[in-house]
Length: 328
Image 1 (cartoon, one colour):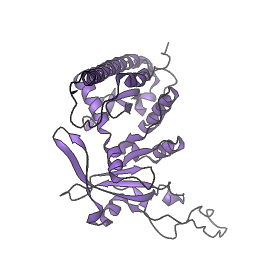
Image 2 (image 1 turned 120 degrees about the horizontal axis):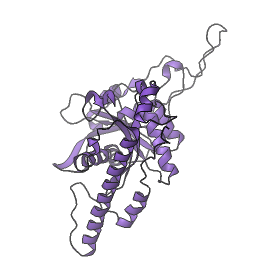
Image 3 (image 1 turned 30 degrees about the vertical axis):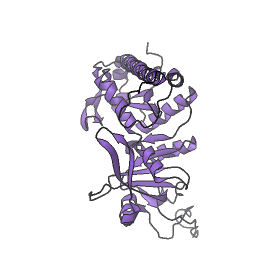
């Protein structure tokens, strides 16, 4: 436990922060892997780590690195590859996006307004080697500079922002204005590095808002509908839904201990209980449908729930990460 930023609280507080990986279907979602984030000040204090039971050789890792490790563990456990959805806290990290591409995983990740992109394919040039100073850069952009995604959004005409409805919410249909454009993220531009692969830039600019509110980078083919891109980007509501139920109904945030093993036990039990409730909910829906009754569905669920036996396969893969060997 340390003073660190909590997204739930929206401020710096004395708290514990975890990274979670969730598996989502059209009918339900469930966290399948967890990792406790250790601030660097903790890992630099061996006595504190030993007192809390932090096992060796655990060391400080940024959250994006923990997220990639969770993905690797889930894939190693048999979880089928799916598109990765992440917020800007992860999507803005170039190394995280590169890690997903190296694993050949498609993604839709949030980015910040200042993210640099090219809207035209950069051309490779070579600088002349004068023999003095540093060697010629591999890439020379001919004096051109990338644009921020905010500048790209402002340059698009109003007709480029049609209104899209992506699902039913608790207050009715969810709609907003969106635009998309093919771009090449320009990370490494100042060091003469090549741009990233071509991908989609998705922009949300609600009607009446002075500026766009959200941006995403998405890998995918050129021939894909705007509605599909929006649904992928907005699928992260599943994570918020999981956390809401885990905290409000199962006490995920009630843990007040300061031991590594205790935290993992608490998270594991909360996840198992949540998985059981999800399975029973799906079983009830499938049974009601089989008996001819109209199954209860929350607003926003437009598709028929998956049969319980199919969810069983996903639940069998739900093995919250076993903590490494405890310190002696």
